[in-house]
Image (cartoon, rainbow, N blue to C red; front, side, top):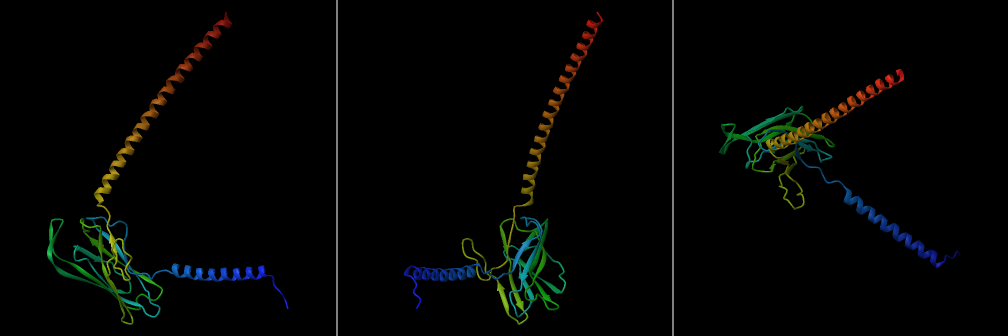
Amino acid sequence: MQVFPIASLASRRTAARLAAGAAVAGTAVLALSAPAFAHVTVQPEGAAAKGGYAVVDFKVPNERDDASTTKVEVSLPADHPLASVMAEPVPGWHVQVTKAKLAKPLTVHGDTIDQAVTKVTWTADGKGIEPGYFQKFPLSVGALPENTDQLVFKALQTYSDKQVVRWIEVPRPGQDEPQNPAPVLQLTAPAGEHGTASSAADKTGGTAATSSGGGSDTTARVLGVAGIVVGAAGVAYGVLAGRRRTA
């Protein structure tokens, strides 16, 4: 019978406990690092400045392994209606733009508009968005409102098995992201404000460049005069030396 020292047995038990703990910790890390399901989002191509126009992309991923996305419906914000909404053709999809009469007409560039787009629907002509893929649906929208920092678009995603996922929950500041968040477009400062800042920066840079150029010219002139003086002195010295030798 083989006998193990007590110290050796204790070391083995400690190692086993550490290994079990590491396994549990590793499982916890994997669980925490597992990616959350992707959802429908909206992002501008460039900037979405208040009071301006922008092209925005609705990114729709397919979260299912056994069905394709065959229809996407995006409702535009009723509290901030957009006078101009145009859809870019997407190959393999039919687009329908729905308009409605506004309770309060809008005034855009001096024109009164009494109706606006309330919903845009894309319906697949073929297989749609298959598992493992996503699709972007671009819209040109404007004029963007100036009295808010964001626009909330609610979206419905329909699968080939008729299941509908409603991305309509509005995210709240300071709270966890909801399970089915609605796409939110963040607006930036009006273009005029950026332009004013850029103009001020350009003027400052131009002044600095002019001052620097003036300093360089002054230095060059001083060096030039000094060179002439030194040259004249050299010539005079040469003439005097020649006369002495001749004498």
